[in-house]
Image (cartoon, rainbow, N blue to C red; front, side):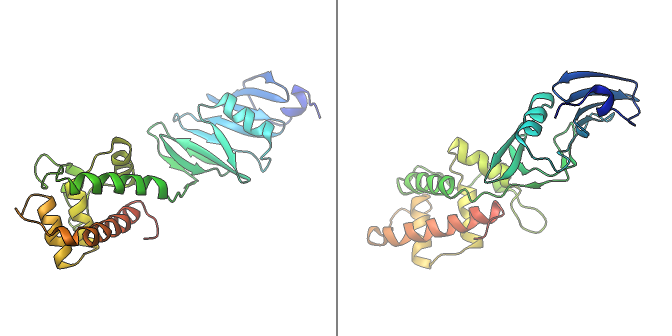
Amino acid sequence: MKHTKAEIMEDIKHDKAKIIDNNTIEYYTDGTRTIRLHFTDIVTFNPDSSITLNSGGWKTPTTKDRINSYSPYRIYQLNSLWYITVNDKEYIFKDGITIYKNGKVVGAEVKKQNYSKEIKTYIDGFVSELTKRKIDKPGSGDCWYCLLKTDKGESWGNSDHILSHFREKYYVPSLLMNALEKYPIGTIQMSIVGYWLKYLDKGMKCFDNVAIDSVKRSLRRYLKFQLGLAA
């Protein structure tokens, strides 16, 4: 149903308003710019430079299109749910979600992903380089976020940091040692890892496959833990 400007803005205090699309009004109130679809303020540009998004419960193709057209953020739909991406992080859309200039998001939860394919690809590449003795010992040239620890003994690296290693195919020796510390493997397997990292001059070829399986299992559990997933 098509509404007039007067109908849409009835009882709404404003300084100025204009029609910008079908059933869509842009209006200003005390310096706040708002996009209104039918009788719902769907995009609000707040005075503090944050932006608030709202469907009013009408998660329709038209509402999604207007938000995507008149805000700097894009909503996409998957399995009947709306998602929004802010600074390469995906959130489950909720009415009233507010996005601040520094990228902080309030009123929505991060979309959980299992990253199973990314984890497997990274581990396969990591172990391939490790077994060829192409990965150096942990040291000052290592990734600082993986090398350094908090007062609680936890790595500085967060989920975004881990994902950056996936993208860059950066196989970090300190990350491996963190994984083996949190999820230990057998003594023989550790000796073989010591050979791969060039701590030892001789390996035990007959146990390589056992060590590979153990290292992959430890890395998988550690990466899932760092990404906030069930290990």
